Image (cartoon, rainbow, N blue to C red):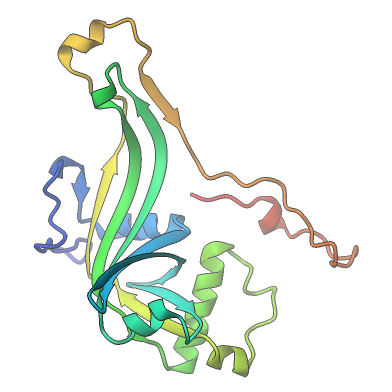
Length: 219
């Protein structure tokens, strides 16, 4: 496999509708960069958990952060195997039969073991990447974390090494006999859109809404 592709593993090899699968690294990065929330699946004390959380990507690593008291983070830093997923919903696919209804989507499934980030510079850089992933340009405008805030934040890094992508695009795929049915079929595109920013009432009237907030969009 080339550096631009992941090598499929028994865990990432897509078996259901493999024609929708991809092991393209740039495509996985693009989906991760557009998403805002991931789901982390792991097993702790014999019990399965799936936890939603925000994240950020920097190079070939996904970073998550939170309180050092977080059960999620304290469990993962012990070397527990984790599965991270991100899904972008692009549309509803309405077929002529109930059976063939579907959705258009882009998704990434990533397996690995997270490690704790202790280096102060990497930790700060990871938090910057996290902040700018959510709102590009925000980090350079706000107050950076204090020393005590950094100490009170646990950052974990998950390598993007064992992953697969799955995508569905296009119109419904009906059974041949159903195309003659007098039923509307097609796609209803969906997208994450931002409404107009709402200023904090405690903001000074002299502080203008930044351009990145007024023009905020995903994708």
